[in-house]
Image (tube, rainbow, N blue to C red):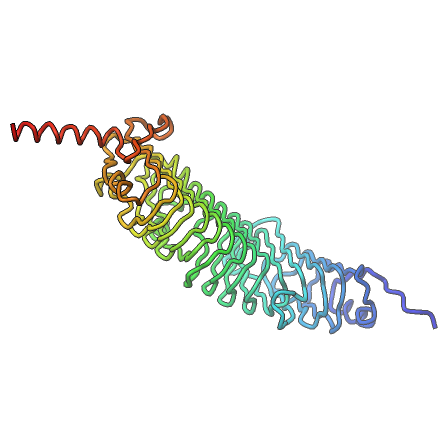
Length: 397
């Protein structure tokens, strides 16, 4: 009897094609085998034991169900033009090694049908990458090593942990998400990750270009003052172009490396729970009062602020400060910022080096600040001291 010869490629357009190929599916164990699903108009249920390298599916009919629940191993699943329907994945115990290693869902355009959505059952994948489409809903997935969303929305009440997260023009609603193991990058987003749980990031967190909704939209006021429940960032936290709104992080207590806020105009920054940061830098934030709310900041390696300094606290911008190991540099574009409180904190041994001035120029053209004296008293503070001495002499001749 001739040994079995795997056909390697299978073309599927209906359940009849699957049924006719069941024996081949079960006997063909080659890692080179692939399946092409082309414009099916019926639900598709694959038999147990399926083990192939790639499955590609295109032109899936609306409200179609693609069932891979009994699959053994699939390296990559590529789906194109799937706007509405269901995808059934295997259920697995080992959450870090998906039966279907990677799933990529790519649509050529956004879905404009209000009720379009793709329901995903089962947890048998490690990576999910999606471009366009209206919404995907995860019902069982609790962990993904990679999640990438572009111009689409995803919601899940089960997703708790992600390895690497990338969102470009998308919305992620994950009410139970508590941990991003590595890095997260959010670009061109309306609102950030929506989670009702404090979120810890094990690597870097980068947010670029928050998209502001129109003032006449019902959610405009809510989104403009949105609270984001990030608890800690072990790496760098970089904020760019978060403009015309409030950046409010009431749960953020620690940033391991650098917290950088830049190019975020006409905004308010609330880091009221932050107690420790590696380096804090804020610059090119035109129309925004710096530094914002850092009422509980205690520890930092260095702080650099360049722009319009808030004078409402009479210079007491870090009231809880315990130690800045290296330096604080304040390059104020407004001349009425008072450096005396920072100078006093340095005299108490709380600040390594202090450079603080006030300049009557905008923060885009400000000259480098002059270095304060060793005792931490800036030129502005020296002027104040001189006036006080003169008054004392006049009063007590």
